[in-house]
Image 1: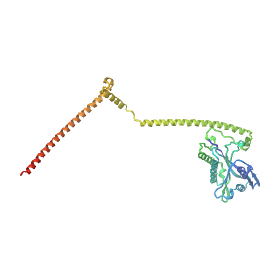
Image 2: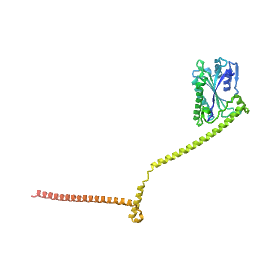
Image 3: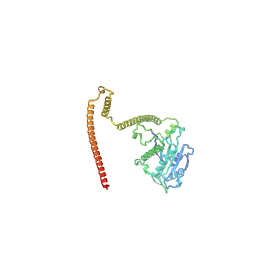
Image 4: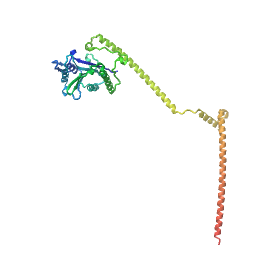
Length: 369
């Protein structure tokens, strides 16, 4: 099973955060915040593999500039506890390469813009292997405005993403899983992801505890905490469960192949038996009896040693009598036909001779002086 991670976060002023600082860190850039009157400089940050802004059709061109975009987002919010931005954090399946990750990100961001008409700024981060991160941990931060963006600027709030019962977050979790699986398939991988929780999947795996930035930083420094230690134990149990499931899948697949082979062989036998005509035991017996009788008639073996079947001999004798009777009948008919032909031919010859004499007499009579 491929890696699946999709989380939703907010950037809220009530937590002392700003959209300009958030995007400066994610993009690895220097961004000046007009509202705060200070600069957020993360230009030395490494590991930013790709960054791109996605806007709705007809949006003002100047908002393609990252600093101007997020300053306008900040300026549009007037309350001191406003939520100024929303973030989807996703993990890419490790089976995908850089080009495939980018194609996957573009599809997801385009669908977010199309569905909610918001401004989206996405950054792909490579794993920090030097600080202990998993080398497969390619992930993206998708920061988006909380207001719709039109040609006139930012307008109404996208409240549907704030409501837990709206189903929007569930929609995006499932949609992201679908995108992952499509791109895994395009990459020729058989791995798949599932957006459902382990509990809903009923796969025997345990969910890990959320570590947060502090625990993550301590882990990178090699310092264990109760949460990190518990998560490591859960991961070990999950790995054992996955290996067990994999072995069971292999065993099931092997048995299915054997069963399929047996079914194929059985079907072949049925088809072959249907093509082969059944043996006529009676005809075979009579053929052997005729061969034996022929040897007796040729005096190759004696009648005593022939072991001829009495019923067979009686049937053949009766058939011989019938054939002889038919032969005599045909012979008599032939003789009668022959006699008739002889008589007929004799009469014709006599008639022809008499006619010749008459013709000669007439000729002599006519020539008499």
